[in-house]
Length: 461
Image (cartoon, rainbow, N blue to C red):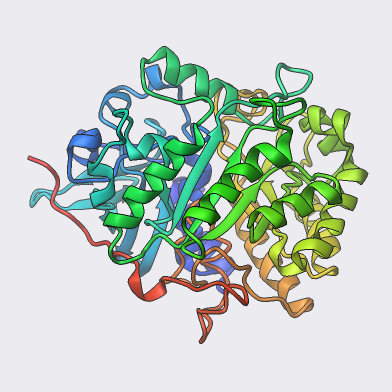
């Protein structure tokens, strides 16, 4: 293939059942996008919601390497529509790569577009600055720092512990830059709270609840680094759980409560449930046994792959299979030097994992791997996994769900191309739209009809 355009069009032709929107979205997520100065935000003083760096960097360069994009942040997400491929509304998480063949820039009329190989391929919409971002906490901290929102305002992302106790080469997951992201923001003098005080979180949520008059924010996720000992005198279940308890007591039923944590023993998982958590994400990261041991050395050392999987199945007894949604990092299966060398092998392995969990009624989801350059796998694989892998994964994912009679998992907004808001992979874009989008869980509602829209906007002068 002589150009990225030729590669993308070839894959759209070869896999016609995968929405073309998902093909572009996966390519942007795996390889990043460059931003012209006309497409950058004015940080928290402008009209565009800026990138919050809510847990990982999700960039293809360190802050010093991003140039003006490190000083004037790009938008949190972009929406693609129209263009020569007639794209339906597609929400994409921003991953900055100054050398990407994709570029967001304004045209002669000041309207933003996405350009590939120099050709405009889509109109670009950017998220408006939400009213709640314009207000600060009583201590002067910004809502964006304490409780940023992603997925076009659907999800409040509460990274309440911004470092991980799996530390160093012998424990850190080999694709994860959570600890480096903490260090680079502190080095740049940016506010980046390590452990968020529960009262700060509640105050930020009060501001969101007051000014989110459309009730677009529908869920919150509690997450952060793994806790192998304690934080503030609390073990992992109690540390993350006590935030959920406080939120549910202050705002009963306002949001879908989700927690991303390690695969914990059943008694600890029950504590999450008792605290008011509705959805549990015990991420299994990568399916293959050898790759799990190599890429997740801390998780292998402290828990072990087999025990991790047993705990995931046990947690379904507590939350119900539908509300246990483990994530995996799609693409690391093919990372050199240890990963699979062919797409066929990688897809076969990942599908084996999908079938294992889906046969128990548990529906995993995935994040498209962004090879951050400060991680071992990012350094060795700056191009990430082949785009073909990501497209075939979408095909395999949907086919496996169909085999086991499963539908889209709760807490992710509506499925379907043109409707999905989940921004860090295309799995929701690739699933069929459903007639009843209120089916999130028995006690959960959706904000499908209340989400803010996005359209191409005139760039700043």
